[in-house]
Every structure is written in structure tokens, then in C-alpha cells.
Image (cartoon, rainbow, N blue to C red):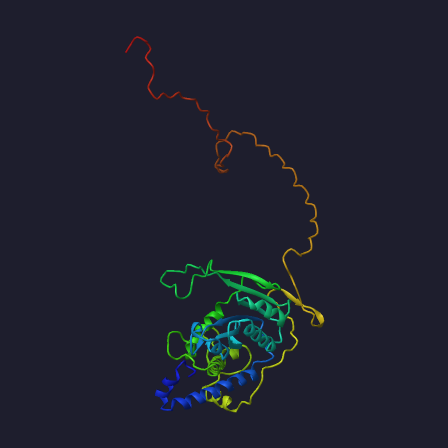
Amino acid sequence: MADGNSERAVERMTGVERKTIRRFALRVGVAAQSLHNTMARDLSLSLIESDEVWSFVKKKQSRVTPAEHAAGLGEAYTFTALAMPSRYAVTWHVGKRDETSADAFIKDLRARLVVMPSLTSDGFPPYPGAIGASFGPGVDFAQVIKHYTRGGRRDDDHRYEPPREPFLTRRVVFGAPNIDAATTAHVERNNATLRHHIGRMRRLVLAFSKDPEHHRAAVSLGLTHYNLCLIVKTTRVTPAMAAGVTSHIWELPELLDALLSVPETPAPSAKPLAPRKPEGTARELPGGRGFLRVVQGGAAPSPPAAPVPPPPAPVPIAAPAHVEPSAPSAEQPRQLDLFAWRPKPRTPVQMSLFGDPPSDPTAE
């Protein structure tokens, strides 16, 4: 199931009844959330991207009644916070794409960190209020906004990824983030990995979830397996190893033993945040009061340079007097006189393009 197979596919491969597989998947999925709560706490991750990936439970949102909407049916967005460059999934939340889900997602993210991060998200409107309430206005937060056209695109790839420029614009919301490096490309790429390893999140298939509780359990199991067991090609280690959460690659037997033995663990509580160590030239202030950065335009003026004395006037060199060369003797070798040659004066010559005119004007 961690490789994206549906319950019926696992039933055909293992010979175990589908109802048994369903109950077992729910148990290990709930335990995966407790295992993540045990390990993902007191994290020093300074660069985080967040995004939401769409899926649905039992019905599409347009066919859901008000009672079914209250029960959790219909659209089910998975909010994911991805740490860079480790690509570690810090936290996730499954719910509607509304302010309530955004507040719960950011609050849980804040509780797992001990360093003030630099956050980047898409243009979802509830993010600024949720991040400001949990992290305060001192956090470095930027948004990458996507501009969709009303008419839509009609090229060969119009149903999927649109062009990046000028489709994307960046804006600063809080603090002073590096706006040139602000991006959500990594977490958006991670959404494809989630759809590959969690069969319930795939599009245009029959493996979608029929119950909200089972959908949340499947997402927890998939992301826990991703953090502990999946090797990222760019880092060549698992995301949990790159983030310093574990020191080795977890095999499936070890993960299964941990899921069957982990006690029920709630999410961690928020702790004070330490200042983030900035990149580039910086000096840490004493007493943990932050960092002093060198910025352009703040350097002290350089002292005036010492006056340079004027160069000495050139001394004229007299040409040697012309001496007639004498015949070389047998005892003295012939020397070349460089001043013996002089250019001869040139006489101007009149040139005519049509020949000389005739002397007699009457002559033809």
C-alpha cells in the first residue's frame, strides 16, 4: 500500500480479504501519525515551503449535500509543509481548503519548530493571517501567486502545468525574505510523489477514498513512509536523515514494528523560537540576541587618499651632430650611423584624368 496500490490490488497480490486489509491499513495509518508526532519535534529547519494538493472522498464537491459536507465528504485538500533542502515533510493536514484548515496546519507547523523559519507559500488568502497569528510579524514570509486566465489555455498541455513566466509573481508579506529565491516548485513537485505513493490521491481512477478517516490514515502512512524509507535522488539519503531526525534508512520490517508498537502520541506543544542563522556574511550577537548582517550601502566612507606628486618634466634630448662616415680601417670595424640617412624631398606631380588640353583651341 505504501507503493500506491489500492485495497483490491493488495487483496489480489496477498490473498488476504479486502476488509482485513482495510482494517489493518486504518490501524497502521493512525499509528503513523503517532510515530510522526514522536519524531518530528524540536526541529531546526529554516527554509519551508507549503502547498495544498487536491483529492476527494467518496464524491466530487459539486455533488455533496450540506450534511455530507459536514461529515467530511467531498473535496479533501492535503496541506503539506516541506523543508528544504532536506525535502522532509514537517507536517501535514487533511481538510477543506478554508481558513480553519489553514490555521490548524500552520499552528501544528509552529509547534514542531525551535528556529524561526523562512516561509514560502502560494497565494491562498488565509495564509498571511494564520502565519501572523502563529509566528508573529517577525517571520520572513513570501507568497508566490499564480495568475490564471479566465479564457483558459488551449495548447497541448493546457490541462496540466501552465508556463511559469509571467504566470508567477512574488510578493513579500512579512519580514525580509529572499524574494529572488522564493519558490514553491519543490513542494509542488512533492505533490506528484504523494500521488504516486498514495493511491487514494490519484486522479481519474477508482481507488479514491470512501471514508474521511481512512483517507487521513492513508495520507499519514504514505508521508511517514516517504520521510523514513524513501531515498531522494538529489540528497541520496531519506528526508528524515537529511533533516537530522534519524541516522539510518528505515526498512519496511523496522517501520512495521514501530507502527505496531508506538503508543498514541499527541502533537507537540509550541516552544520559543531561536533566530535563524542567515546565509552569507553575518556575525552572531552575544547573548543570543540575533545576528548582525552586512548590507550594501552601509559601509563607512574610506579615508581620503594621499596627494600624488606631479610627474617630473621630461628632459629634452639633443640629437647628435651629423658626422661624415669615414672609411673603416682594418683595426676598427665599420659601425652603422643611424642618423646618416635622410629622406629626400618629394616634388609634386600634376596628374590629369583626361589628358593634357590641346595647345590650339581651334584644333579638334
